[in-house]
Length: 286
Ligand code: ADP
Ligand code: MG
Image 1 (cartoon, protein in one colour):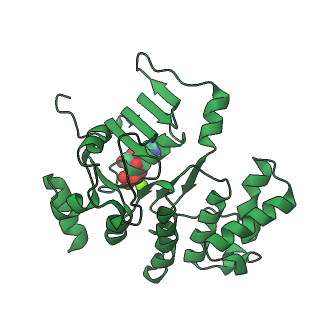
Image 2 (cartoon, rainbow, N blue to C red; image 1 turned 45 degrees about the vertical axis):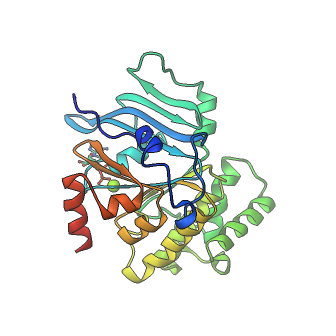
């Protein structure tokens, strides 16, 4: 493990210093005092014999949009799942908003008390490829379920909040529709409203448009872009290269269990340094 992969911290002092401030949807002034909202340090994860991540270092600052791309099976979903506690890590440290939510085999780092971990993980919103809406509940019921059961928000207030979030994704007129009556794009927008209803501090998107017919992709990407404009912190796995380029503050490429590139989008797409990134982009874009 002699070679050290490029890390988020390095990118922050070098690549991260953006000359083009507000040019991107997720843009805005970044500086060295920016607060790190997610920090992964020396993350290792295997499934049995299969080593998936081997020494991943990655930071996301508050308000940043960081995209992860890479070949199928390279561990993109695993990175997101390690962030929000859906996967147990084998080694390394996961910190969210300064709270150590996982620390394994790392002298000096130890997990925070359980209550604190639960509180910080509750501020994570995740959106999956496959919507995962409850089919027997209306759009609004899907959106207010977690606020009512997890946060104990009274029904009347939860409904107000739910309608606000449905309006946010342009679907307040579908509040009473069941998922079977919604298009894929609408279902995914409801899933985003559902995540937003928990008032998350950051959002994780795992291929949010991969299950959609091409003509429905845009409406979902538009919602994510609008979140970027509001400076929602996000990690996004997507194969939509145009979108990734437009919305991201940094683009990360995962391959062979490591981060092999971590650059601002202009640099990532215009002059990829790593041959595997160049080959991947060539395939995706041509
Ligand atoms: P990506 O999202 O980049 O396509 P994943 O993170 O889903 O990749 O998976 C990385 C590798 O780990 C793949 O080879 C996948 O088959 C394997 N994997 C993922 N989850 C599990 C699991 N729960 N059990 C066993 N293998 C898994
Ligand atoms: Mg995946």
